[in-house]
Length: 168
View 1 (tube, rainbow, N blue to C red):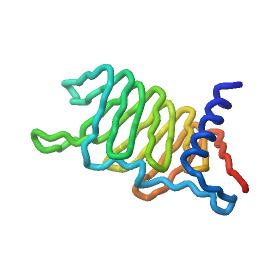
View 2: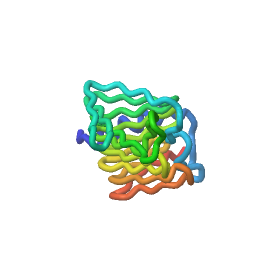
View 3: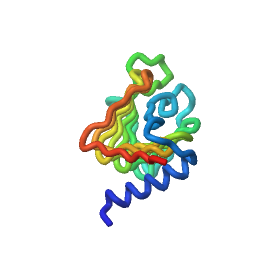
View 4: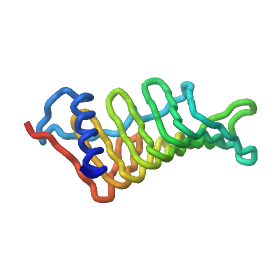
């Protein structure tokens, strides 16, 4: 079985476990919003390695990275935090987060994976690229590039988009 088919089978199994309800074609809906938003609460990160770029102040975590904030979990091989300009002295406000290498974002209601993710905190914009798979309940959507405006709750998937809709 090909890697893509194995991933699809895994995602279907995950979808069945996450959303135990049945749906018909009229009820199929993807929404993008609050469950994927990072907020102002503490972000706990664990990794095998940590580096700081003194010039830019950016922090890079690498190797088995796990970042947790509330009910959101982000895993990847690398996670780079860039800080927003204009933060008060002694404080650090994350401006953007870039994850790469088997990126997975999981909440209570959805899971999304890709090869790379760029999350702009100020804009609440998430862009994920490379073998993107999004699971919400029993719905599954895949493609090559996913962009979401998390404030507006809108998103788009491009690049040979595939969806699986259960019709019961």
